Length: 55
Image 1: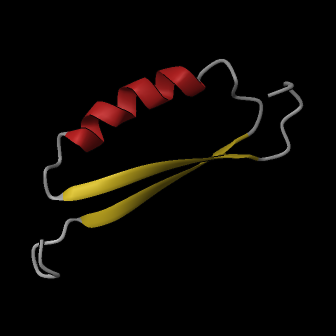
Image 2 (image 1 turned 180 degrees about the horizontal axis):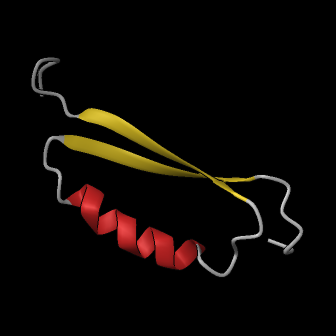
């Protein structure tokens, strides 16, 4: 791909605080939505924000 036709990279940054019970469900819901956008590439960055839930 040339620079003009290169897909834009979208970084989805998700801060997490005691969210271990919903991370997988969130990722499973948001990934298909982003995959459906043909004009982008994406990455998901999950940031543990000092959780006390052990994960």
